[in-house]
Length: 412
Ligand SMILES: [Zn+2]
Image (cartoon, rainbow, N blue to C red; front, side, top):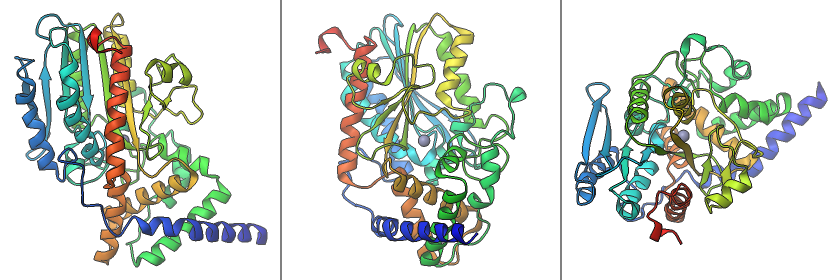
């Protein structure tokens, strides 16, 4: 008993000494010089930019149109559709903001796609379908989750009737730890309390149990983190319909990229493949001419329940197995990929949940928690934004060249 107590204390001390300075350094200010106008400052600004794409694309895609689907009185899922003007061969689909707050970086990437990459495509054979924010409420309110606290990328369950809602035992065990039912008090006490609890947890359950409990999603605690819901959310139902329409349209080859932030190394975007990828990590990196691709054989590869890209593949197999589909996730890492970063990410996730459901007595604590959360999904640093933009262009070019969608003369 005493030995265990000492281990916990030591672990807590190590966390406090090494991680605390790192934690405060990013909370005071956000970098205010944002990269040109590409990275939006608000949801409205982002949506306005998105609506301008119709005019940007029209010289090439004469049939381009904007669709606005109302989820409720205030929130809409906006999309831009442009069909191939002669023959429906390839369709490129971009989706952003499935995790609301991640939609800001997603929006910047869509801007880059429309303004800098779409010009290389052959409009006669290639169509576009771009969805601004699948979770507009979460984007506006700067939360990863939607208006019902549901993580939409855990909500694309293929058949709820045969789905076990109580499957995440690890989460159940850690629920008390995740779902803090106290108000947030003074930040120093709050932070110290967290590190001693996480240290105790790391000693008793190991960090891998914590990570697994988080990543796979849970379906039993509606106020918890990574909650996947119990039925299709309105956004999910809408997207499922869209995938069906796309599979039933004439396109033979479909490339879908879902834009996310938060996971992976800070200055290198990861192409995170679905479980259907048959290439190995090395083969995929060579094929896409891109330095970081996660495939099912990769060391840290994982599949979550209710993932949107997995759903798309399953639907394709059922409706039109003859078509060629490539549906993948682009993950722009933010804090980094080490243990320190994953503990930070866990901490910011939990404290934002605690703040959302229990508020705080202190405005200062609220601001700190909010800024930390924003930095976790939408870094303000100029260097990060420039690298994200460059990686996005490289990866899109690499994937489209490999899929033979770029015009022949564009391929070097
Ligand atoms: Zn995400």
